[in-house]
Length: 156
Length: 241
Image (cartoon, one colour):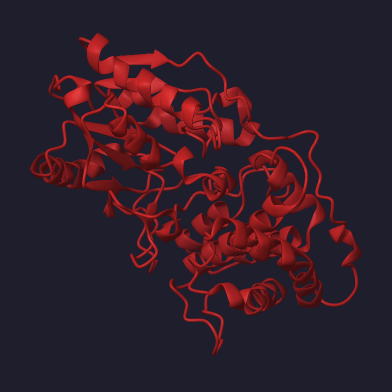
């Protein structure tokens, strides 16, 4: 997350207002995963990523898209609704938003146990995150069935 | 926001929006961010937010970047003619970026890469007429959205075309988001067109969705010097409203 002082003052004020109005959610149940070199890791993005064949995200979307672990970047696009972040960085290097190559490298080096077969993408910019509870539970079940030990949440 | 959500383990990073791993094309920098985040699995015993202390080496150029192309020369003719002329000047560079990358982010609106002229023509017509409630009529493009949300994605496809054109040009670091936005809204016909479309949304029949799309069309601070968002925005909004 960026420093508010690095943003345009209008955007900074907007985010500060959103943060102050955001309802408290957590904490959730504390879970201790296996050692990292034994753990399978999945990425959960809020960048509005999806495969080109998938339906794009709508305003206020509470649903999610699945991203296979063998995704190629020429098949990965972004339909996040906000105009307030730098898409050119994702265009140049998709790993800066969705670091699947980095996970593969960490797995090859034995630093993590493995890369999940499936990863998940939401669209952020939701003032009340509690509205994601149902879909969050759903992908939690899916990740459990996929043998995922660690969910690496990457906000945009 | 993390303080409200209280995730079990969070790493706050000092990177620009859109760059959560910090540095483009720097696998070690990206992996070190991830290693630090994963390290919290060993060290945290209660909900923890840790600050990442290392700045990104390539935040992107802001104050010093300018586009080598002088697009202000496209100053005669109608808005549509000027926008198409601008697109034509950028096209060789956009094609080169796609050739180098083997991919593009263009196309969320439903337009194919070879339909950018028609996309620009339709967007300029919307700006000139102020018609923001009916989908543009075209035999060429199958739109992926309904109005007015379609406007937001047409705008983003055109902006993506411009960004991809800039990316291929010779020079050092790429511009950051602020520099790109200043360039679009100060020096391009596209910026002029975006503001006119936003004006049309302002005048649209009383529709929360139209007002919201106005805010989603233009980065904060670039709509006539201020916010394009309405004072109150509630989610989810039914796109039919």
